[in-house]
Image (cartoon, rainbow, N blue to C red):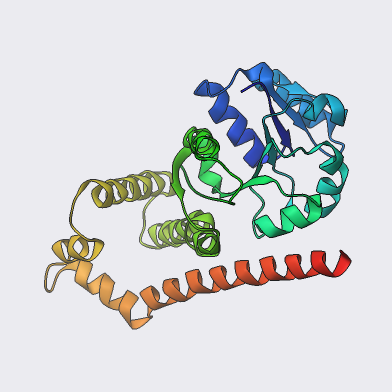
Length: 278
């Protein structure tokens, strides 16, 4: 691969740059980055990772094998409008834009392209993302594997059908926020029961890490693991009964379903808006 161009220089773009450089996916000088107008941000990325930056689109996109769309979803239409004269059929377009369908990207570009749509999450910043990718019919098996290897530099990558990406968004895309919400509650309860905040934080984090490792490494289901901890008449059972009385599990299920539905609604609205303009 000669060159990889990234349009957008936010936190997800930086996470990808960091992962690719650290894992030697591509030579850092072959990574080119741009944004709308924040030159200070580009200078930071250049100094931090040794990547190349430019506002000159010809310099940025000429001979690029992969073009990563990492701008804010609301800026997708204007950004793709700017770069579409430089997009060629042999390029691989990789989008991390939540809610922006492959169809929308092709409509905006006004040409058939090899497009991969990816849904990483914010844990990419520490190399622990759960990323799902979907491809269109123009993407070759070699290109698909190349993109999978690229996202493997920031965590675990799964290949899905595009229609499953809304569910992925609701589950793992938004998933870190659900866990942080739980941690917030655990920290508040710790203070109320008389524990120091810093001590509580260490205990909570280790508890989450340990529980995640148990789910990952054992063949037992989460329900089996929960029942093993829940002794009749014990402290865990008392706590679980409170959660059940407030229908917490049901609330989490509805939370994920609603986030999935919202992803679908946003995607449909964007596609319909593009079609109306075109």
